[in-house]
Image (cartoon, rainbow, N blue to C red; front, side):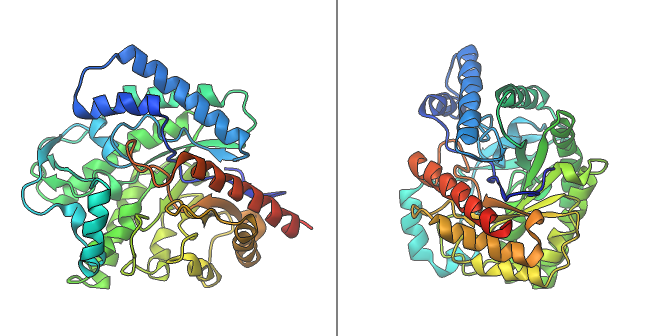
Length: 387
């Protein structure tokens, strides 16, 4: 994993807005409608080639495939790569609509849900043994991305995948003796995906929004100690899944869901940063570019970040149409670099711009303008830090 040795490098969290022609195939896939499989594969490959080239042209240093190969969402995509799960209509309350933030701002969320489709429309139930079965789809994504990377002037490429805690959120277990056994099986299966990406010469990024979001769903009635025990258990499973993979090949991404809501009940970073740092990763990708969490850059002044670790800090928010001024981006970078060292900072975004293929946080033109502001702000910061 490259570090910012002579300038501040730039990256993002991974998910980018899909082109219309690819979305049409994905709509058919999600609806179970017939489609031309060869034409879809060709469209997917050309779409990955285009988005990879565009990232390079906009000056992003460490890039992804946009998560274009995932036809469900950033976490639910695993349903197509693991055995043992079936989808059923939700009976009773939708688990996606749970949480303290939604309880406090119910009227707001009712309005938001009316404007945006609720992400969870069915529940996933474990009814059999969990094993990794998505090798063909994974190998396709790796091949498309590596072919697209060839000849481009970029620093590195990464593929984002789900961490065990975020695999199929709100799943229900009907097969294993208990939920712990189910989680262990998920971790063991996902290790196949993590290893395949690293073995292909790419960085693997574990996306783990549910690690932080679970606090909003759990406390109260549970306590902070209950939540930290839950999180620590998932850290152990994640590290077991990463066992043997060099930490410098791993990025670990934590955010607070990043949906366009109040987020007043998010768990403070200072309460979980010690557990985040227990993950055997070379870089930690942490949300920090929005009004609810921007102040938490100060936490890194109180934390002993190991010398061999890099912080990929969110300096751009993906969930607002306001485009950050490059000088503000530079300010966010410089203050953090002065705290932990310039070589250990990479400038990033809070989260992905399209958590599912059919849903985007902003218009594509705004996405690219934000990434341009990220690159320009990093250049301003670099001139100051390497003056």
